[in-house]
Amino acid sequence: MECFGARQRSPPLEMDKSSSLFICCFVLVAASASSQSFIGVNYGQVADNLPPPAATANFLKSTSIQKVRLYGADPAIIKALANTGIGIVIGAANGDIPSLAADPNFAGNWVYSNVIVYYPASQIIAVSVGNEVVTSPDPNLVSQLVPAMLNIQNALNAASLGGKVKVSTVHSMAVLSQSDPPSSGAFGYPDTMKAILQFFSANGSPFMINPYPFFAYQSDPRPETLAFCLFQLNPGRVDSGTGIKYMNMFDAQVDAVHSALKSMGHGDVEIVVAETGWPYRGDPIEKGTSVDVAKAYNGNLITHLRSMVGTPLLPGKSVDTYLFALYDEDLKPGPLSERSFGLFNPDFSMTYNVGLLRSSYTHQDQSPAAAPAPSVYLAPDPVNTTTSSTPPTSVSLAAPSTPSTPLFSVNPAPKGIPGSARFWTPPRPTLMLLLLLNILLKLMGILL
Image 1 (cartoon, helix red, strand yellow):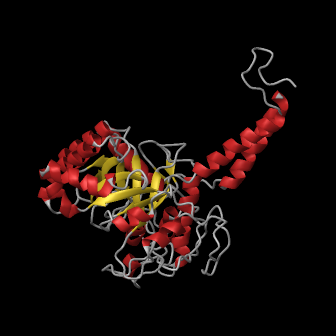
Image 2: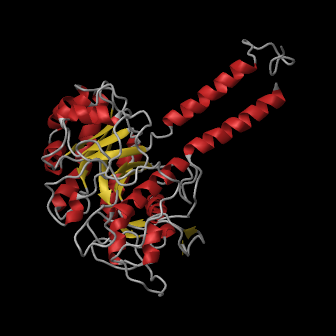
């Protein structure tokens, strides 16, 4: 049998059609297996009812979640995740920053105790030094952030882990001073951000950000704003600088951050969404807190990420995104919503189904609707929405801490928020693979 290319030169290995088909299928399966690598989850522990870390680690293997972000460096969790293939982001607490900045030996011991003794069995991929430090009210802590990251980086380099374990810090959207429209994104805190971004560029570190469309909706609780936040059909919001019509909040947020990075000469810095989510219940004054709405946001976000369509300014790829959160944290203070972000219950049943479980997992969904996740979730209008025909006014995507009602919706709460991007209802991953396989088979029929 003639093989492709055989008439031009003798190939090192000949294959028949069945071999070619096997290789094509293998490539497609491999692509599918790695297609979830950008979906992670936050694993908080401010609770008294969580299952043991070993049970959680075993459960995570039954999901398509490939990365976990911890807020500390709990040895029990890090050990439990060993040899699972799940990437781990560990955290150095804000309270550790002064010691990490002042003493390289302290940083070295911290890296040894929390990274080296577990690596590589536990696949630690990043260290987050502090959480939302830049927008904290403590100027001394802010000034010590870069020296702390530098000492952690030097300790990793000394252990030959530089580049394998990234060093970063997590920001709220309030680090943006300008975000409306997304193309005009700019950072506040210019001196601080300049030093941080120089460190990121020099060490290949990602820019980690916490966008929450939920808080934007609280400041502008109209049906069209909710649809914009939930990736549902809506009129869209046009970026006056580029003419791009954004159709969801998430993409506009990411693009506002990218524009801010680019404006400071660091457009090559990778963006990682460290937290995003939607609570499934809340206090009476909290708008849109229901299972249906939370399922719509998280389900459509996951579908959007799996489509690999990207954002208008970063097309063709999906940013690493850590959903908030794995479990409810029942000991958290504040409004009811703060204790109601969990995707799963302590018994591993789903709070609601957004398609994260693999088909081989035997635990049955105990939520009311256990059907497979559709391409786009359509949540009913929340009871607490207000109707208005007035067009949206200009909105800051960054929204420091003051509520406002800009064009792209803001982040009135501490966790921060901005806008999103174009609406697209992508095919599900399985359908995409079938289409690719069909095309490859046709090409093989022609070539062979």
